[in-house]
Amino acid sequence: MDEATLMSQHVSCSISFNEWIKQRDEVYRRFLEDIEIGYADRDVIDFIKLVFTKKKIYTTSSCSGRITVIDASYPWLREESYVIYKKHEPITVDDIEQIIYSHIPKYRFWLVASGPILHFVVLDLQSASLLLKIVHGAGFKHSGIISLGGSGIVIEAVSGTWTSFLLKEGSELLVSDLARIVKVANEVLIEGKKRLEKLFKVIKETDI
Amino acid sequence: MDEATLMSQHVSCSISFNEWIKQRDEVYRRFLEDIEIGYADRDVIDFIKLVFTKKKIYTTSSCSGRITVIDASYPWLREESYVIYKKHEPITVDDIEQIIYSHIPKYRFWLVASGPILHFVVLDLQSASLLLKIVHGAGFKHSGIISLGGSGIVIEAVSGTWTSFLLKEGSELLVSDLARIVKVANEVLIEGKKRLEKLFKVIKETDI
Image (tube, rainbow over the protein chains, first blue to last red):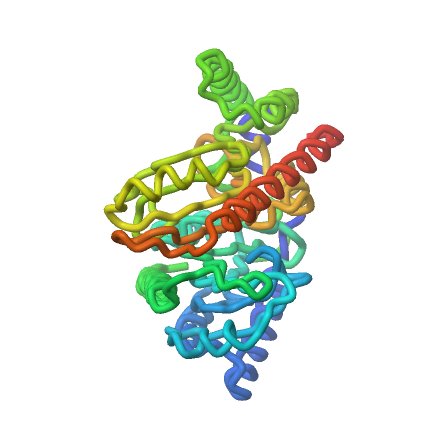
């Protein structure tokens, strides 16, 4: 295979412009509905609105970062896992004390502080390549194209500002200074939000 | 832009087949050198050898998963961060006790258990799309194309089996049951290695 052949390679990710616009408008309609019913993560609303002013990208799923307490064997599990507490803003020691002193986990209680996660749908590969550079530059170091499927090119932007703390297993508390844990978890959350702000600024200035 | 135009879109990721093969052979030569001097992560050697028997993919960087103790404000940092301890196999309580009882961190001591991370260079987009499906299916859920640059298409495969434990800040120990922490960290490591084995089997059976 020579370079000319490679240059013209295509994959099944291709989607017509009209179809792409139709999907984008439908996602935007649902997003406005989510705001209406108070379901949207407030810290990310302006960011999403900005992205929808762009020509070749939109977002389907966006989280500004959050702190959760989950009951699971491991903090990454979604099945066999219960979210006991969730907040997109800094938390207090009281919030967490109420959970861990009065409940016994089925598996283990983890306090998880995670940064923003954004899913972008991108019209073409040139724009995907540009967006990858932008998100990596803004500190979303674990971002990549996760799908080249039929409905467009999907980029997951993840900041990597993520920390877990094992709080309790059975009736045994496993942290000795909850105030310090909460302080660090809040720092992690805030670092994630800073990266989101940085990304906001760069996307605002970029023709994409 | 209509679908036909989109189908033929190309990006600067294109590389000639000859150039790609040349780079692959050079990476393989360095990998054999690493084995020779005992530098390679033993648990991933067979995996890398398998990948280099394939036609359209090779790996540049591979870790089978590891447990580290790092001194850093946050566990994801690479700068202003010191790796105090690193092992690609299960650890013992003794290993960790020796570090945390006799040293005071500059920042904070974190015990980090992380799963395998693999970087693949892929010849073309069709193969990239196929490899993405394979790695996602094998439990490498946070994998994506991280670069469409001049030297090929790069896929980072990450399992998401990752856990941090805050051990110590200043002279204050922050965990109350080190044996349990070590047990969970070892479980996390082993879960990552299992996913690597699963990926090994699927890649072995796939024409890519």
